[in-house]
Length: 254
Image 1 (cartoon, rainbow, N blue to C red):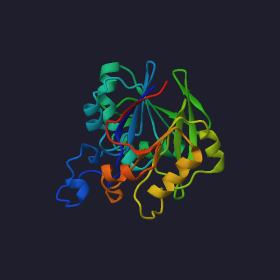
Image 2 (image 1 turned 120 degrees about the horizontal axis):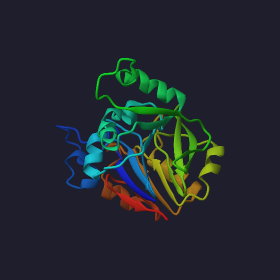
Image 3 (image 1 turned 90 degrees about the horizontal axis):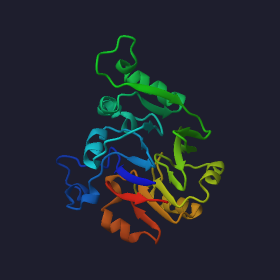
Image 4 (image 1 turned 45 degrees about the vertical axis):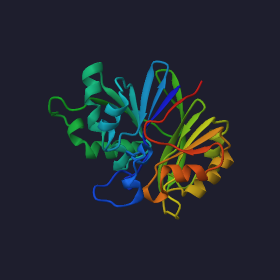
């Protein structure tokens, strides 16, 4: 399995024109973050988890030429707004793009991208196949994916486990039953927005506690805002086995 971080930021974690904060002025490429998304390759299967507003730039930067499916964690725009940019894959691969999500996620996408689902579709609009999922494991081309239910304040969100890799973003609470689904994970990715308390996201300290409870061999933090601070400084504060992810980071898991 090969994992590529397409984005590790939030809407408050991407470069802002005119901002004079240390992160925006940093020359460290790891401080330049697109919205959170990850690209996973398992054998011949390639999937993306979430297509935020930066999706087109992300796939161009990463040189992605194949995509078999999109999986959505939840319906917020910073995780869905780039759906229109699957069109090149439609053209190249000559097939509809399966998009997987909970019913409420798919319904929100159908409202926001009504032109895709219209009975009188404009030529060239994205071609998609909606696939409803719930909290039960599902498969894509023979690969089993296990949803991990979490809460983003009061909003249900799904993390996903594929083999020994678990990806969770936009969460501030993980039920005990979900912890059981994560047991044995070798690589964990979880959100760590900032150091100060937040109503709907884990802080860095809370994310560290969750990571220690899960006990993965390696944990990476994502969905990072400017308030967390400079990558190099924060990364040096973290215990062994815990690290900040960054855009373009690639991992390989047997």
